[in-house]
Amino acid sequence: MAPPLILDLSRLLWRSRRNVPTGIDRVELEYAKHYIAVAPDRLDFVATTLLGRSRFLPRRLSQHFVAALDRLWQGNAGEARPARALAMRLRLALLFGAADPAPMADAVYLHVSHHHLDRPRTIARFRRQTGAKFVCMIHDLIPIEWPEYARPKHDLRHTRRMETVAAQADAIILNSAATGRSFQPFLDRIGRSIPAAVALLGVAQPAPAAPAANAVGEPPYFVMIGTIEPRKNHLMLLALWRELANDLGDQAPRLVLIGQRGWENENIVDLLDRSPPIRRTVTEYNALPDDEMARILAGARALLLPSFAEGYGLPVAEALSAGIPVICTPLPALREIGGDVPEYRDALDGTGWRAAILDYLQPDSPLRAAQLERLAAWRAPSWADHFARIDALIAELSGPA
Image (cartoon, rainbow, N blue to C red):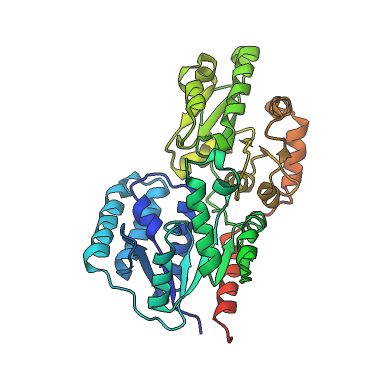
């Protein structure tokens, strides 16, 4: 018999103020949508207060909230007020009317964001009160492995999160084998071995998007998707685009940046805001709905992702699934997604990036034609495959000891 499920909605509850989701936001939303669809009668929701107390949320109200938030993040701006009103009702319920945790026989507690994992006592208290088995997703260990690209002291906070998972999780979900290799030392340090499932994140399959007519002007353009932060290596790409603008003039390709401005990025922002060549050739969208992003991506010569580090690389999967070539760095997680399809260039190889971009710019580009040929045999990771792996993990965890 399938076990009761408890899904943590803490991240969605506090991120509902935003019109555009991040990657982790999308994952928590996808889990909520999936289990509402396939297991509504055995699915409960929980969230934490600012003081670190976990409480159950009203089931029906939570389902309405998830549906409204999904519509908002799909680009329906009219859902902003209903989604936020429902979020406010849930926050009020969390403070004044939500049920305190109680024992739930054989339940599984699913936590698929990093929200409040740096509070081990909160997790331990909820597990003790409910008796639920704790299944947690790890998205990346970038703040620990690359602290220079994180907010100050975020490496210490993320270390506490990983220590909580290593010490308390009954099973873990990994978005890539690369993430699993990065996490393994935390288990080795305390001598634990726990079940794990590598489950690549799915890519939504909307109706094919028609390219946006004159969305960014002529000549042809390239797209980069992701938060504007040093780890994504926007600085190299913008320096390259400044060269192209000076060298090619009106024939320089356009670059479209899709993503919110992040942190520690003063040099990047200076180029975007103050460099005349950049302002002529680069278009920036900080809050673009999914349907508009798909339309712009559909007309691109290629997606560019020159990152120094990635835990997964969802834009690569999204671009390839839309039939758009990719030029990216040869990171393990990106190779895991793209296989031999993308054009790989080292993050510091500015000359190599320039050569690839100029080749892909041409209507008869041999490199682009070769990638499109490789792409024909590529298979997009699906949410159906993802959840099949998760259900198998839960079944293994819930089976006879």
